[in-house]
Image (tube, rainbow, N blue to C red):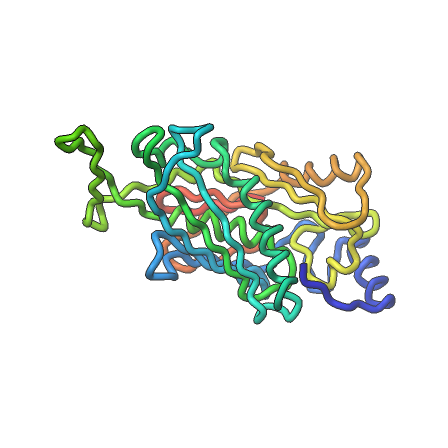
Length: 292
């Protein structure tokens, strides 16, 4: 992960602010920075989205291709992730540092999103055991100012909502083999149900309190963070500790309780969307509902 150097005096200042629920940029401990979500931003993809969270920028593109189902689940499709850590985001991403971080981020995203509880993978099946849709999700980190996982998860959910998969007609040839014909009508397509797709909330422990959406300076003052992926119904699908420090059970319980508070704000999805102080996103057909 990208890091910054923070002096001891700055650390004390940040930790005292967190203790008093007043962070350096004026937010409370459970407030997010300004967020912008823009969909359909890459023309040569089946779905795309860009998310700006403070000064963290993430671009996601999705391509749907026909592949072969995995033997263990012959009646389901699947997703594959690739995360590209651009050296323009931070010099630390240049060379092997960026490659190793990209693999780590890809593996975590795979665990969060590639399961039947998050996506209806059966809807991606074309011919059981023979053909299925494979969603290749490419994530590009354009700029990094902390809280990568949260920004990536919102961008992935928005891109999945924007994804259009061509309708498929399956027929048999004279020899009994299956022929697949794709519709060339851009409006004759299948849309993905993203209702249960989770978003990630990362909580960083600073002193005796925790904060959401930590900046790089705040991250430097944190001993450990807790990554929680959660659906719009409040179902936790993945929990992972980040960082070299440890978290006691009471701290973990307190962090997970953050998801139970908040309000609801409707915003348009087909234009650029703006939101403040949001923990996760539920996208319906015409509106996005952001919940704390």
